[in-house]
Length: 492
Ligand code: MN
Image (cartoon, rainbow, N blue to C red):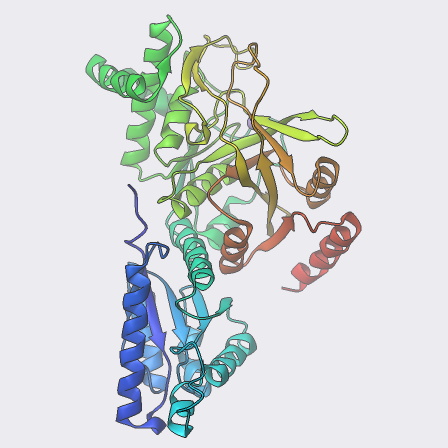
């Protein structure tokens, strides 16, 4: 099973010398117990690292600079067990380059009514110390997340875990390289965007290669490599075709693209069916199986969605529920039972499958090439999110809609692609109107693993606009939010 344990979060506890050694020793002891508790809990996906209690401006600056420099550190968690005057924090916080979570918790859960005295109050005063800390974070406009609650409580830890996933997404975003195979689909607007701005804002290095560069690699794949890839396919999927040559060609494409991704340390890629040159098939099964392995993918030159698929897959790398490239396709407009059916011409990730996926070979009208092999399946059911990143010209906006994936009770014998049927919140019409007012794309990322809060936290860390469409959504209120946001983001 994959794990997120390689990502470290430094637990930095603030205090000051005023309290004396005995109290400071107790603060450190308590912090160590808490760190051990977090690390022993499977609900906390990443590693929490205990750091010595910081008592003054130099110690705070030093620990923050060390965190900035540490390649494994994905974020800092601050907590004020006692009172740590915040002017001490200004120099360090000005240098902060890592995501910051401020936990407002307390070592003891209950007030010890019979024993409480001033010594106890001076040790357990996060109600007071964390407010001073919250002020300076807010005063300095530090992107932050605040979570209040008792540190042993399941809800508190689940929220910590969520924020960690967002910080993992930011960590991986800043290291991401996206392989563009060809350019965007001609004349399509929403898949375009400012790649230099994306590099500055998200850290994405988005590089183009010609289709011929891939074709050269495809031609170099050996029969033995195709055999090995075919063995993987037949282990993972049901072979529901006699056209083995077509499936072998997808295997050949997958081996070639994977080598290209590995050699260039790319985490995501896109194709473009309009520019296949002498490729015999649009990569279908190949793209689907690469997504299964954690690579980001999107069709038609959509590098933004390909990058988001990669980042969201890594945020949920320890989860079994799926995350995939998705496209809104067809509505079911039955009164009271409105649904949206998502799919793509081929490339839906098999991690969404609610059954063993089948390999089929069916002609594809679009693209003008040989019938491509692809995976088909009925998708799993349950709550999920759809996320779409768009370029507003002066900023990026992330739109997330909560949906509930439905059981596919009807067979669709003539539909040769994997499809997902969902009911968007609050309802089909409101969701669709909200999505369109917000400018959401027809391409998105569907994830059964991630939550709105995780994506909101990611957007906060990346400092981009976030729009949530859910049960609460009222169109007129949303339109006001969008209008106000336009003005606010122009001022930023
Ligand atoms: Mn598409």
